[in-house]
Image 1 (cartoon, rainbow, N blue to C red):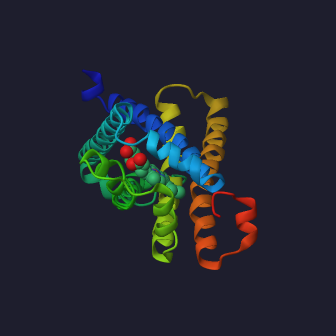
Image 2 (cartoon, rainbow, N blue to C red):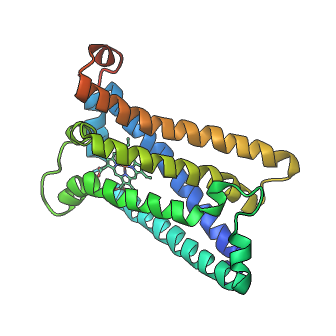
Image 3 (cartoon, rainbow, N blue to C red):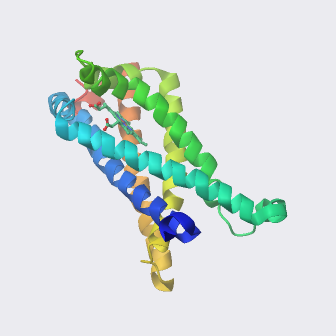
Length: 231
Ligand code: HEM
């Protein structure tokens, strides 16, 4: 089947799974921003997404998307290297006009993955996983407060967000091109749409981390008067 055999087929699978993951991230960012405005609202969402059947189905679906995306990325990277053969050093020697993210998609993906492992240990393992094993999950708001009161977690998360930004800005228009929605005119437009969308998406995550860090570290009262969820 062409989805398995051809490099275009593999790219189509990567594009569709990648866009699915972006959809999840959009929901996840929106959900996290609720923590800024209402602790009760955030607790309600966490409870809703606990060990209920629909949340478990969602988690399994998400894990499948990730496994397929990563497996195909590895497969595509290895087969590209093999296809280039002896030429590979000449080709990878910084070709003109090829951007940083495009040349480093696999390495960026690896950083994104390592960050995700840390993140799942920080949150998911103490919440949904505990509940699945019959225990009482930790409170989502408390976990956010604790995690982002530590400067080293804040630093690691900001580096992680930077890698995700590079990975997604390239991945977005590349996916749109692969599934054939981009012609000459729309090529530049999709690139801009991707940059703006991904930047707003990541600013949402950065906003939560930095706001909680500033409030937990400096206790600025004006922050609590803007963001009711902090108080
Ligand atoms: C401000 C930053 C973030 C916060 C506060 C946050 C918070 C959380 C929380 C509280 C959970 C546990 C939910 C539960 O088990 O009920 C969670 C799970 C998760 N987060 Fe995040 N997150 C953030 C950023 C991210 C980013 C950038 C990614 C992906 C690149 C991500 C991917 C995930 C995944 C895959 C899960 C598991 C979802 C599931 O169980 O279905 N998170 N996050």
